[in-house]
Image (cartoon, rainbow, N blue to C red; front, side, top):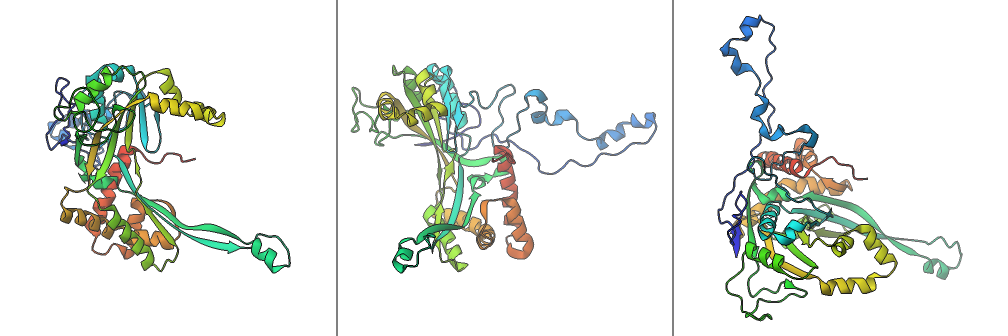
Length: 410
């Protein structure tokens, strides 16, 4: 059952998920402040009350930027405002990779209210869907044997794969109906009794009484707080609580077919691969113990791999770890109606089609961003999509500010 998120943290004493459809949002302005006046007048004139309206705003008007600069945290426009003194991420991740974040903290193992609050906050962080288009073809050539015999020449012939274009575009801004105010269609859903998932078990199973093993049949569908209580009450010392961030409300197959057709319309005759990878798709909370720290440390994993010790260690860890995979944060690009879903896909395609096709013809590699979209529009490729292009550029700028941009990639 889906339960929309609320802006505030859940009541620790409640075992259910909030049901409010809207949430408090972080507002921001993308316009620079008006220039202030330069005063070259007498001191007495500067004390007039009439001049107060011409002064620039006080620093206190922007509280989100007034924290101690020694421990400055960038303002995130996609996260809801929290009460003064509270921090959004109460536990820093032990490790991150492209798709997952891993947390280890004793408070998450012992306090179900703390765990539920932490999971609830992490469910408000969006997944990052991308579209990736790769065009390749094969070329054949001689292997350089140098022989005069035709058979030797044919035997030394080699084939290689050549990448013609490799581009990707971030789609995170489509998860927000209004990125400037962080308005999104999202909800927390817990597993139903008939779903086969890991419920504190090694293998996926249904709930007790619904086809799964267990001494007592399940009564009702447990909410987030109840699953956190069961996780903390488990006697297993190797545990993992997983939350999946899922993107819904988009027909990926239809959109992929449109993008492949865009390449064919450019008379491209190679192979086209369209994928939709999702980054930041999972959160794993491991019980804080030495074994779990080792399994998440890259150099320990490399040592076990090269020494072949993983042949025995990995099966033992798999069978000894109890996993909970019962909570999903669903982010919808549309409200679920087929007509609205098609309209969202068509609107995005209409804005980006010219830019994508130009990048294919230019044999581009890498991420296409707002600059590419604006350049296509400036060249006349935007057509009547001027307002849509401007809105897309602004929304993608909000996403960049939230996740960060301009970092080194080497």
